[in-house]
Amino acid sequence: MAELLVTVGDITALHVDAIVNAANEQLMPGGGVCGAIHRAAGPQLAAACRAEGGCETGGAVITSGFDLAARFVIHAVGPVWRGGHHNESGLLASCYRRAIELAGQAQLSSIAFPAISCGIFGYPKEQAVEVAVTAVMAACNGVQSIKTVHFSVRDSEMATLYTQTLRKYA
Image (cartoon, rainbow, N blue to C red; front, side, top):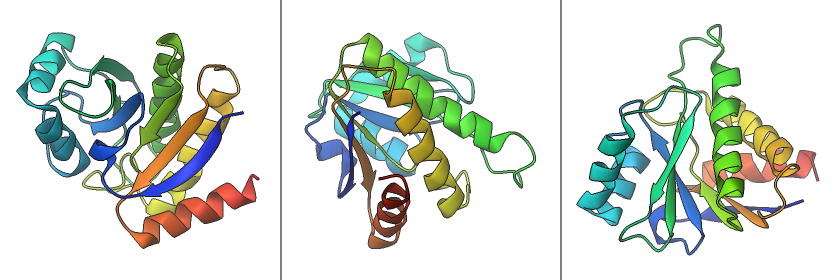
């Protein structure tokens, strides 16, 4: 089983094999984590994303990391929160699982996730963290190459939510 860590700070500065971008379906630069990753990676990232042609909600695609410390960016498209009755939890879990699958296919050993869908997509934080942790734990069981997973957060509130959730499953 991979080691699951909570890391507070800038996801774009982490020295991991891949960072996960909380992407939109068009894979274009946006605000929040997505904008920060695109700015740090340089304009080549947007060009690589255009070449992918988009990604459906619940899915993920992998590109080079360009100017990032990470070699790769896995663009995972989480759902917009619409009250919880539109398969939001299934779609959120799916994008985490797909990101882990892509990391495994590329034989990566470390990956860092932001709190997908928790920003402008409006997913309730406690519910999103629960989905993230359980989906990542389950997906990592089938991927031997991944040794370390970071849940990268910007503030103590999210760090506490992830830490408490990870303790439940320790």
